[in-house]
Length: 307
Image (cartoon, rainbow, N blue to C red; front, side):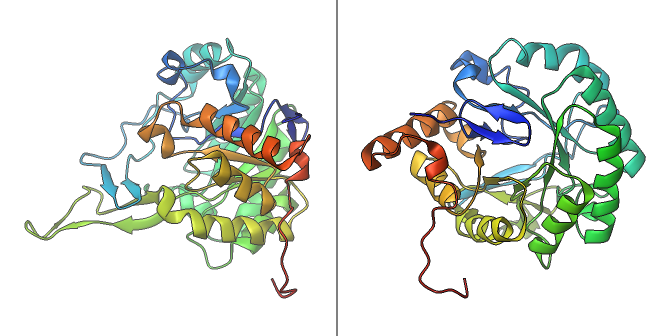
């Protein structure tokens, strides 16, 4: 069976990635399996300078999911290029850097240096709900996003450019169009949904940040709907994510139109979740008599033409 897919000019051996922020820089998970078994690693977000993130408590388990308000803690650009990128390069998997900034100039500078350092792809994080600057501010307005993507596109010559979209917007389709028009090679969605938890006995928020990003199986129906909508709206590849824990979950996202998928919260439940999803896709294809994974992409059958 052929499981390879292409995101722009980047060819992946299979359509399974791991979502940024759920996999560190790959070092911890490499103790459990060969990272070459998955299509690519979307590494933890990188800012110009190191960040400590938000104060604890900043993670809370919810029914069928998880709230997090990590606040984009990371090692910073220089340490990432010197230490983290060389490590992931040891494996036969795509190295995808996630970029975050407070200003367009920061996004451009970080992306240019990462491109020069030889990452396979850059994922612009314009959709994190847990920081006061940057993040969602750039994704809230399509025109603002389009200008930002355009500036980064001019700076990035070799790496594939992916834009990560937020579900916390009025119309995700218009945001996806803006990313495409700005020059993105692909979009990834969805990032987390803003939520909160309250301790009734103490009468206080559970998270120090008050709100956090909800992820996991609880958000899968929303993610599927948004991926389906965006796939009908843009011509560039879509990377689907949001509650994927099994091969069957991944197949559903691909039927909705996604070219590739990313496993996120499931990594916290089982370190081997991502390769298990690869195996699950193969099992489904074998059972259905399919020889090429491309036969799944956009294969959703809908009787209602309005949808």
